[in-house]
Image (tube, rainbow, N blue to C red; front, side):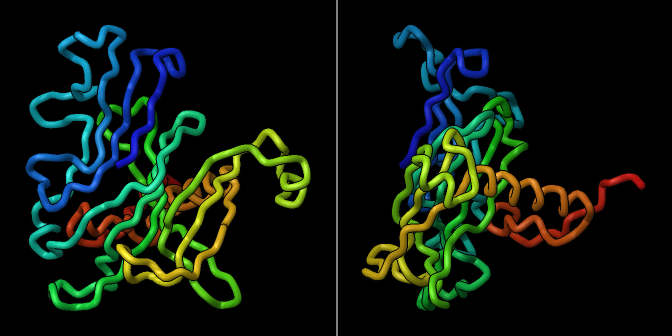
Length: 233
């Protein structure tokens, strides 16, 4: 489980708590991701209630029952969460439904993704996720283990080609895409500038608006959907 607190005075409005948690197959009881109200008075009845809720939509994201029927072991593990500018981010580890067979006895593969949504989006329409990992000497490191967001020192900033006030995401990945519970000892420390992460996500969203590629949310949509061109020429 991972939580990100947004203070009341950061973006206006009340305080919020974004919570990402594995659900252990109980999608009817627990959302995998939600945003909750933080009230100044802890006795307030609205404390920890959804930031938004009506008859059809609320500030939560659930793993569809169809996904769990096809992949009973599917879950999303939230390794690290943080706030950067007007966005909330999570580094997650989840079953790769593209590489894993629905057969329960088959070998399981996992993938790491960075999740992003807008702080002021109570209906989660801005939700997007993007694969993340690193490669060293031809060896892939895809199992995220831990992370930390910080600003670099002068020398590191210079080597990364950024200013020392810019943010860097320090991550540790284990080798391969198997054995989530007992990852290999071989690991790598990988650095990502937030500037580059935001650029890649922006490129992905823009390419989808141009009708290029797919939405890449098979676990949520229960299938891959092609992007639709919504750009007027």
